[in-house]
Image 1 (spheres, one colour):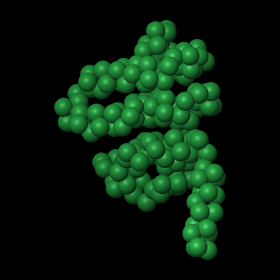
Image 2 (cartoon, one colour):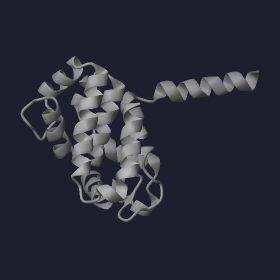
Image 3 (cartoon, one colour):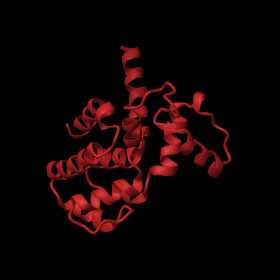
Image 4 (tube, one colour):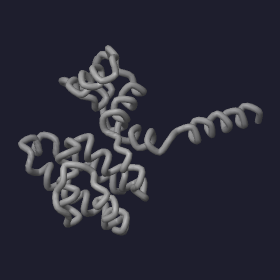
Length: 173
């Protein structure tokens, strides 16, 4: 009984000590491999790592990149304060994953388009407002469709379509 209580206490510290931001980032990283794949590891491309190293004065290496380092990189380079204004975590998860795996500027243009707004290469407050006033299911459907159409336009669609569809489907379930 003592071990069970200790385990529950430790789990609660881990659960309550994790921020919304870290949960969203970790979920996105869960789709990525931990082995080097071409020029990326844990979803972090070599060019992104070089940008982070230059910005922060670190000398992290791709082949030894740890999960916590990938989280720090995504926090610094891909997390925007305006994400904190999104009401629903599932919608925010989709938005973050979209931005990280496309490019933020391209993803934001497409998101604006999906919500009938003038396309902008940044995460505008106008977009935040439209997303928050749209029912969750409808917002996810709009984001899903615009991302799927974009992915289908890529030359690598045939090669990666099964994995990409699996990822998209799991983000909206």
